[in-house]
Length: 386
Image 1 (cartoon, helix red, strand yellow):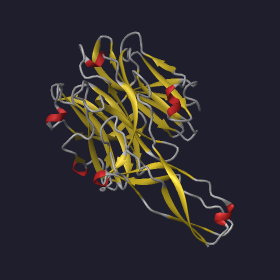
Image 2 (image 1 turned 45 degrees about the vertical axis):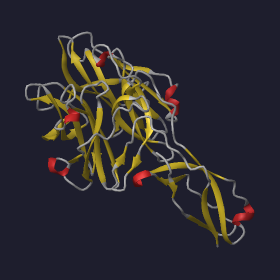
Image 3 (image 1 turned 135 degrees about the horizontal axis):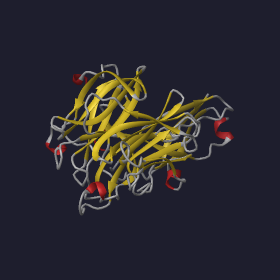
Image 4 (image 1 turned 120 degrees about the vertical axis):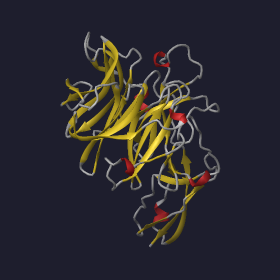
């Protein structure tokens, strides 16, 4: 992404009062895509803001980027920014036998944060195989962990389950099993996520129905964090060719709300280099339980890149840093060719990348591992002292 231009703005203050400058500035890039970037301003002298009139203040744009991968061998990564000042991270553990959690004061700090095992699989029966895709939520004063698990008697009898923790620190607290989520279909089901919108709580999940071959996305309201209530509505099905590579799959939903719209990013196809992400969008004031409220992009929004050497990006989440900048959290492999079942190739590493925005208010994902060419000249703010 090259040749960005910087927004222009002015700042006003009273004589003798130090001005407050924004911590971020907006850059416009190719095709009208915009993004917020941190700016380091020069020191403002007391003489400057004590002298009435116009002044020019210079600053340097700093890229909000991370050294990737953030955490190796953690597929299906999920980061939650909580009100306690911590970022919480979880993801699929390579042995698929436990749920792990770590926290840090910054996103970057998650890289080296101590990891705690908060729950282990059962020795037999349900929740004893394929512990997949955990994600942590804080709802009504309690912590909840959503995850998928199989049965030792039938390892592909995958169902969504919920854990609950009432303690302030979920790494140290007791986690209680709330059981399986009551979906209408007794079939392969996984990747449940939840969100609140206009006072209602929703669940979106992936499930195979119709001869157990096609994985669709469904949406429903919830009466509590582990119980669905009311109709369970088909939200999306793998109808496009790029969603049918290897398997017919829509899975891994992730919710985001911005610019008067709600979005659900999802993943499609087999979990090798053909894995890619799609996007659903709806107006914020629409009925989210009506399929016609949602628009589905016909092309993938995030897919493998030979240029950057990241393959099979997907099963993402979204997070905001301490500057208010949006990021996508996703996994990808550093190579294309895999021996055997890609589910058991554990080098899907957790990565973090800035999210940008299109003119119509939709997120712009770009390519995994992309770099932004920042302006070499300084940012200028016009300061008016009255």
